[in-house]
Figure (cartoon, rainbow, N blue to C red):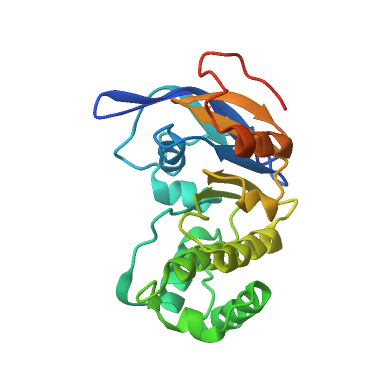
Length: 254
């Protein structure tokens, strides 16, 4: 099983502890939702998983495919099959989406000595775009340049489809989306669900989970997972907010 295992993870930024003992396991074929208030450490966890140098792991471990990945570069983690969808996708003017994705694809696949040709890659992109309900001009443009907020989030899902990772970490992919864009992003995520792929979906609200049904929901408060359960937990949070969960109470299930 190509699971992602986080064990008693402590992380600091500029001397301030943000994550205070996070333990979580995500298996392929599963969708885990991670919820929590602002400043709880959700995005910190996402960036640590992909090796952002700003964050210092002070104790604990992260293993993926039975490898300790803490000593690996972000590039090496991507080659293992980890993927991060950014909360605020960057624009890259002058770089075509097709060339960007083909370079990433050839550098993350194992058969680097046999890179995919431009013709075959465009054919594959057309198939992925059709699956996600996107028009071909979407990936003919520069990376995210001139994209609306919804288009940028859809571009992240398109990258996920093209790169075919084993484990996808989606950092507030629903942030700032109207209902139509939210449905489009959710449709893309659901189309990419697979027994061979796991998802860690980070979100503030359960509205995305109306469309993407998670197997498990976890609540992160002040750097600790304080509650875990099924989708009913997200509905409880929608009704009651986060205040009813004490950061010091034992993990509960809904």
